[in-house]
Amino acid sequence: MKSEHYLGFYRWMIAVAFLPYLLFIFPFLPSTIAGFNITGWAWLLMWFGVCGYYMATSQAERRFPMGFWIPWISFLVLYVALDYSVAGLQLTLQYLLPIFVGYVASGFEYSRERLHRIFWMFFKFSLLIVGLFFWGYLFRMKYVPMGALTPMLLSITAILIAGMYFMTGKVRYLFLYGFFFLIPALGVNRMAALVYLLVFALHFANKQILLRVFAISVTVAVAIFVFNTQGFQEKTFNEGKGRLSDLSLNYYEGGENMNTSGRAGFMKYYEKGLEAAPLLGNGPRSDVDLLRNVFGSTAAIEVCNDYIAVRYSYGYIGLALLVFGLGATFISVFVRFQQEQNPYMRLVQSSALMMLIGFAMFMYSDNILKYTVFYPDLMFAVLGIVYAKYQS
Image (cartoon, rainbow, N blue to C red):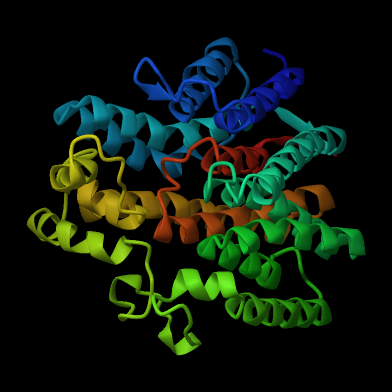
């Protein structure tokens, strides 16, 4: 496989990310095929049709730091081998896929021109998703495609756009970032909105003190405005309105007025299992088995907190290995960023750092580890670029 084949890899990755949106465009399509929904087929295609192909046909030198991730990978594979279930195998493959996306992406050679092509491909795809969002919001009674997953996916693009603004100072990127922020703001996706705000306030590409003060000031002003909007108030507070003091980072103990969209109620079902198997957990995908025993075998329910889901299934040991992989990768990228001189690679590296922070935040309120094609695959592809060969 030649390095020129990078375009095929990224085109397939974008096509796979678009697959789940077909149901929004063509609602008459079947929601499941052979027991898998379209999202399920999307990540399977990415695993075996894309990553599998490139790994099988390429002898390229891949520079992704697999050493950071071997403990997590080994733990997952060994656990599912010893405690096998079909659901556990599926979960294992979902958790492993993004890592191997990064591994494959690191085998290509990049240049300024190639990074331009990749970005514009993804930017045009993102505009298509934005168009679908506004079509649903304006003309389908606010029925938006893929719910909270859409602002997650678009945050990848938004992070890169914010980086371009801070590195170039061009106002068009500032307005473009604000345009993308409308997605979580109008959809009232609270964690996504917080991620977008923190990205703008803390982006590593921003090295100017005055620009940092400006970014933080704008973030605070926009946060106050969003907090006081009717949509945010009604979704966040059971009484339809509330104050900042009513909010709590620990939404399991957020108080009577804080609406956690059912998350707080799930915790009582998990407490016994968390206490019974603190180190090694209760087995792969045991978290969903627990909820289905409570709500019915066909219930599609998740705990909406990856830290708890991983703890319940894999214990503190599994969670520690995952956090180690993420933390070691973050530190490694940060060191590279501090030493890098090339502006294009600095943009990629600073954005990768913000994507890792966003990922950690989304894990706290959702199941982003399983939403492989919407965020993790894309983030790890960017991480792969960080470690790959770059032709100045």
